[in-house]
Image 1 (spheres, rainbow, N blue to C red):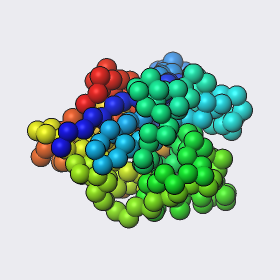
Image 2 (cartoon, one colour):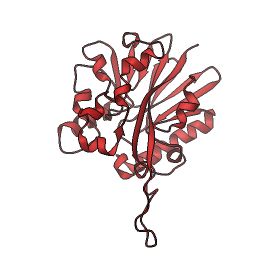
Image 3 (cartoon, one colour):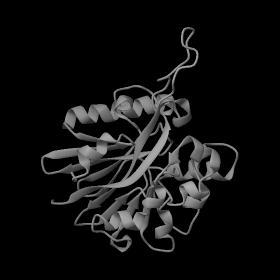
Length: 262
């Protein structure tokens, strides 16, 4: 079956590399005040233009992330510096799509740099696929003082047509959703088979290539370190068995690798 996969550039987050490479810069006796590394992180979405459905993968950050929409402490830690230049509708238009063209949305998870465009689908019948563990944890986190601070209720506490996923499941022919707990309880990735090739959408299971090679993210980015390592072993084994291309969560190298499509 012939279909296209488009990588949509949704801008850049700037943050301390220690969040992504645990202990990448540490103080020592001989260097008690080392220079920290402040780096750039890619934010992306996918459009899977498939005969069965045009599928949007994630929705990026809200365009007013830096104008008070995001809680100030979160923006201080993870500054989406160009969010205002990356409204979802505009970025889709750059690839020849409109919001109305989207038949389904898959939310890899509901952190605020992924769920900020869900407002475009409020009050519609567009199914929003999310793992059952993810939506439970997101509401717990946003509505109580337990869970994670990276969920922002205004993103997802809306009139949306949720399609709740349990475990792995087929989405459309050639696209299988994969449950990859670790970064969050309900993180979804995907295996996309097209012709003789396979694409593994690993997403935030591994922000950077170093994470995919086994260097852990900081504890603040992991819901469960053991689950993260088990999910990593699973996708790396799947890559070996299928000779797949791998799409990582926030590595800027992904733009060069996949910007022309896959």
